[in-house]
Length: 37
Image 1 (tube, rainbow, N blue to C red):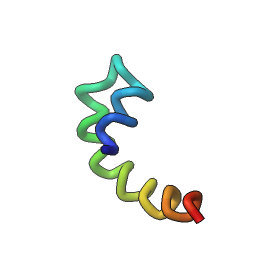
Image 2: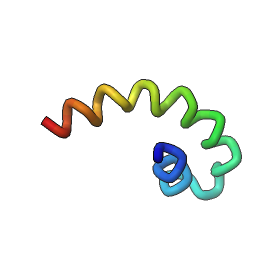
Image 3: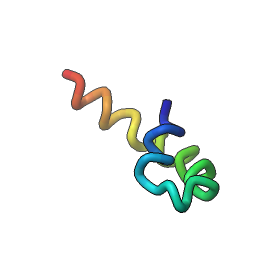
Image 4: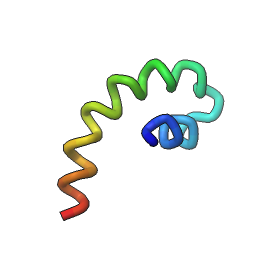
């Protein structure tokens, strides 16, 4: 779950991270898939 990553990266910004991860997970998705291969 991307929410977990966002919270783990910025526990203090967990509230804001939830809003940022919404857009961040979108950009991170292709990166994660590429890393998998």
